[in-house]
Length: 554
Image (cartoon, rainbow, N blue to C red; front, side, top):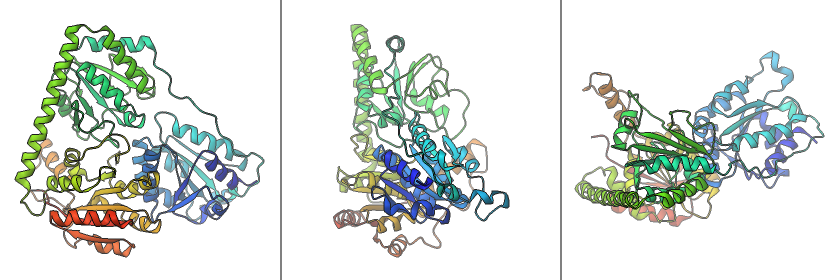
């Protein structure tokens, strides 16, 4: 058999269903022979970044490995930004790229470069197959490493001549790998003793809680100890129902404000994440003075990596949290139980106060035009059916989306990690492929949308019935906010105009762009128009685009 057959057989043997890519000459060994592999469907993109973004979200939404085939050095270069996002998202992915014939490597061939070195900083493992006999073992190891906690992308370079070499080594897979051990009972008791001594505990969760379906266990523990539940500032999933009374929301983006959000907390329990992805520097730790810090992770790599701990353990999140809550319930005194119940009542009352304040702010904003973000999000939350999956890259509109929408838990919501923009439109492709039985609505800012606008063509080409909602404020609003913060932090002149952050002239015609890529669309500026447009788009059974005029930065 040939090396190319072993690679393709390996993909099928490991359960791959889709191969995302943008083809090129050095990829011919794979793309030209896909006809012999009906189990693999090729998802065509017009830019390598879109391929990576789609595969990243597909992996998150399906639990399967996202598989991408890129085109040699320029193609890999085009993909690096999105690959960084996949690394930050801990997406299990196999990213391959065709490499030039190794017999020409000393002659600097066209498109040739050191692909392994290019990919290495943004993947868990980067390797080039040097002979066909290596194909089976390298592909097996690539899948293993991609899924080892914390999961992430792996890069494999495939030289065109090696793909055409003969080998007797066929594709191999590992058996079931039980990666996450049950937590040690003594370790659980150690954490429990710390928590029992706390008067104001707090919990922070990362995306591993959603991926591991441990949200219910987190909620049960929070109710047992009377703790608020905070979420990392940038998160890809929703682990708990939005209306859970202990759920406070996202933490801020610098250590000082994170510490302020914790208030008088004397213990902070970190669960399933890198903690914390700060944007701005601030002196000191992100925890209140003298607060104990505990951590539970599924990976030794993350435990105590960024912060000194009072105690921590490695183990499956659900069993660890369940054991922890059970032990606390058995050992706590009546006074400790009553104090926890009182904290839960205060958290529930605070949640209701915030809902009332939100409704009052919304009523005051209803008459403004262009429509304010809060109003648009409230309309979308009412008009979009509850079974829809939301793919969000609204950035400055994200807090309003969180307030308006009610998510039940994992699988209802997907967002990007890493901070790079353009992930939303591309990611919606992967989510729709992963969850074909549910409507998918992608909500994106206009600036973000332009980074991966060719995803519209892929949606039309593959007939993916995604509703793309573009929030058009004709500016990079997040950068204006960040410019304000920069000016304040560094005592820069604060009354200057914002440089190069407006997108007003020439006007971005999203309806016309969509039409050029085979997707019908419409522009709306009033609530009634938006409601009708959403209904029509969802009923069409085809990809649609809605360009919504919204208020800019005041």
